Length: 207
Image (cartoon, rainbow, N blue to C red; front, side):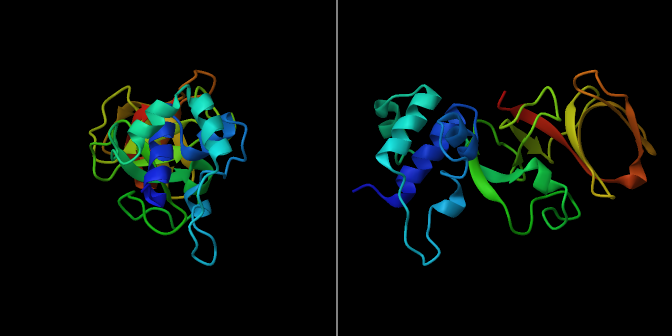
């Protein structure tokens, strides 16, 4: 007998195979972006909510997969990766979502299965809008706080003032952090290390 957890887990892995978050898959399938969100999987009175066969069919088409692939994903566990916390990039700038080390905390996080998540503290951020070129609306960034950062790496930086930045690391000294824009359209940015709450490397993106 199929379980509620197996079906939803298969949908999560289907999204990951397509390089999308569950909401990104729903959007690509022409469904409401919240259709596959974790918060929609159980009703307010605690009853399990199952995805419709129509929504699954549309998700398979959007992901370029077949029902045979979906059956393989049911009950297999996270074969292509493992689940990591997921948050919208715009939400990440608000307080209460990270601890002092830049690790996920608090409420508002969902989960997504991604192809590579070796760092136990990895988390994912979903882009909304087109202000973070070359990343596009619906792209998901896998961020690894435990991965060493080198010159030229793409990083997420949160300032103590609450600003969230996606940049490339140009230079890092004991006192300064020099950052470059990813698309070359914006000026370089220099921050005092004392003004930086945390910095973490982007190790994968669903472009």
